[in-house]
Image (cartoon, rainbow, N blue to C red; front, side, top):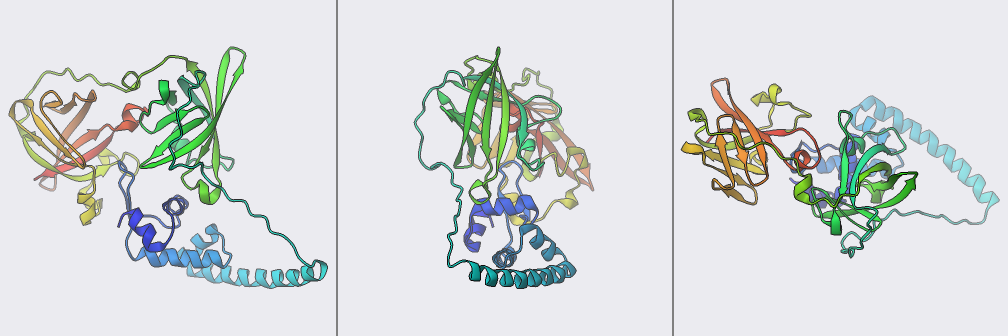
Amino acid sequence: MKIGEFSKECGTSISLLRHYDKLGLLRPIYIDRFTEYRYYDRSQVEIFKQIRALKSAGFSLSEIKLMINSEEESRRLFENKREQLILQLKALEKLKEDFQGGRIMQTEHKYNDEQAELPFVNDEDAVGKWQILSVDDGNDSDKYSTLLLDSKKPRYIYFLPDGENYWCYGWTKGKLIFYNDDRKIYNDYKIEKCGDDTYMTIDFRSFDYAETGETALVKLKKTDNVHYTKEQIARKDDISKPFVNDRSVIGKWKVYCFIDGIDCKKDEFIPEIIPKKDWHYQDLFFKSIEFFEGGSCTSVYADEIISGDDMQTWTKGHLLRKYNSCDCAYEIKQIDGKEYLIMEWKSGDYRYGGRDSSHYVFVRE
């Protein structure tokens, strides 16, 4: 089941499930790396209930992770907790003697009202191109760095005129807006000048900020004040290749799996390691592609069909997506007597985020 349905079964929030996934406490049985949809098995509801019960009993999430994975650790930690509770009870009795009452103050972490549309307010100092210099979440974690930084090449965030959205970003004065599916996360920014240079700091909030209060301080340096358009900043490939026939690709291919380049790389693809679940085929974004004689082709996605030579064509080894200037290389592999079409997938991560392409794998229908 998808994460939304699973969260309802558990009576919890999606953001908390994402937090548990990042901690390795309760991982989905599958994550679609393109759509980022998480899928769970119904049996995992009982695991969540165990986690919630242990957390209510005072165990930390790191302790719970150990308890779930080791019966020996479970016994040890239960005994430790019993001893701690005895000591706490003694301390409570002493406190009762010294004090007649007290007050507990509780801090709640809340997002800005993300369901409300904040009006756009211009900030000319923000418009332009910003290079990300550093990401600091205060605890040596890399969960933000993998999203915002790249050790091999600079990463940038653009503030387009009039707050125009691109990829996963938008903005209004004082706020960088980060989009995740239908959710908007407002992140406060401040701009400071130092000599001839202009710097920005962003208090970047995680998906689970409401539960954890975790943020990361992102530092950026302005590289120019250009009023870019979305079209100008999009990465473009050379799609002017002449047509060369390839009879081996002609026909219809249905999606088999998605290769994210992280857990599995294109050259490491082995069909047997891919889960054989019904949802694995049904919920991938790219559904099928059909190649016709002469260079025409039709792609079927979850929400649209792309067809017509003005939109895309193909030549030997390449799908040429004219509508977004992407050259998606393909190759056909024979594995255990079966043909697999492995094709580059160039999403917003590639076009705007400067990341490498991922891959879809197809089989003949």
